[in-house]
Image 1 (spheres, rainbow, N blue to C red):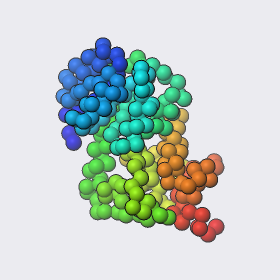
Image 2 (cartoon, helix red, strand yellow):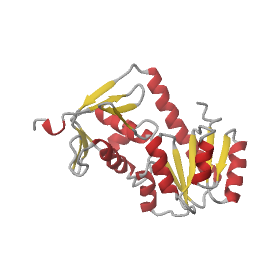
Image 3 (cartoon, helix red, strand yellow):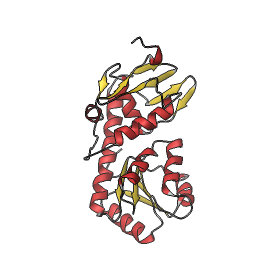
Length: 241
């Protein structure tokens, strides 16, 4: 994927903003499609396969959080959420449902452009690393993580992970039975952009636990080491202390 000619899908109920972003991002070399709501987005997705979705949070009908959750349940297209809400709690909720980035309104289109390039660059680096490296398969419990084709299976069932969730799990399984601080995890996530007081590592851990732990509140594999960080124990509860 050429990040400068990627296909972007803008989902926003503000026609003025859609027109502005379509024109501006088109001038930057991107292919741009637009939808006014979730229904129109679903129709667009039948005909196009965007490389990134720019999604408004506050829309009539199905809101952006619901749409993002639905998209994440069915695929891993990167998502940047836009919202007039700028509080930290809204940003965290956006990340919890699987968004790759969050930008409060009003914003400078140049800042959105920088965020788009950053998200696409991270995705491209991950894809290049996957191609360059030999297949790596990790087994833990009933799970099988294939780092070559970026899949996680539990028995015959595939567990759908977002790009951020997969990268975090990959970093954890490559460093088993070792305490990893949040800063260490940030360093292990290639291309990750960190801002002050960033809690997105904790958000990713929470989302990942919901998908692989039988009891997310009392995890077998991703243990919290209070005051230190997280530790991945592939043997789960059977690991000798």
